[in-house]
Amino acid sequence: MAQNPAPHPGRPLLAEDVLLVLFQPASGTIAGENTLFYVLAGAVLTELATQGHVTVGEPGLGGARVEAVQDDAPADPLLRQGWDYVATKPRSAQTFLAAVGPQLRGPVLDRLVERGDIRREKRKALGLFNSTVLTDGGGRRADLVEGVRAVLEDGAPPEPRTAAVAALVSASGSLPQLYKEIPWKSAVITRAKALEQGDWGADAAAEAVTRTTTAIAVNAVTTALVAANLAPPQS
Image (cartoon, rainbow, N blue to C red; front, side):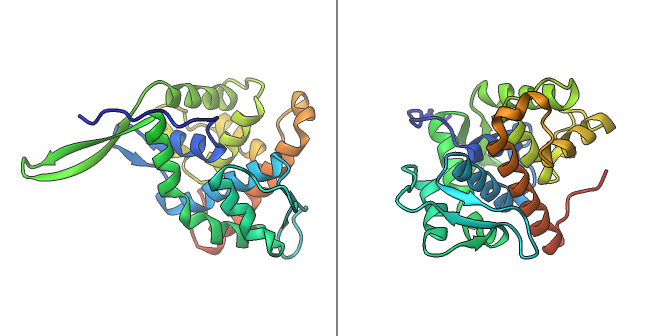
């Protein structure tokens, strides 16, 4: 069994939390692989805007406009890639997702492995062929999923980061695959859609930037999935 490497320093990115929730330990797979790069890019966009590195306009005819805040590049290299893309000129949110997303899965997964949240283990298939499987590395995924479940099923007041994770996971169309941990029922569907649209409840008023930016990013993800004929299931 492979040993865990040293944990990655610093707080996990929102994209890391989204990917970790989508990871399915029972099968060693990631839910929603077909939509994953759009969702991870949406998480990067949300984080860039929340931290003030970019501004995101309201959705319009051509989609929301993403513009870099000059001389305020993020230190994190994954966020920096997204910032660099809009630093030369403003882009639509959909263009941002399509350009930035395809490069994210590998580095984000590597970070989760570095942190010990996911393990890569070497195994032999049929006793002959070496293969690498992904397994759960510890308790952080369980804590994240429980936080999302409490918000969606129990109606718990959402902490902004948990609400953003829930909204992005919902936008991916992958919540039904998590039914063993987050029951797929009408109340959960309704709450998830409300979070997607920025309805986080009165207590979230102080988190207006995160709420609004997440809603814009989710809208961009949904638009991209529809355009790619990968629309999530309708309730």
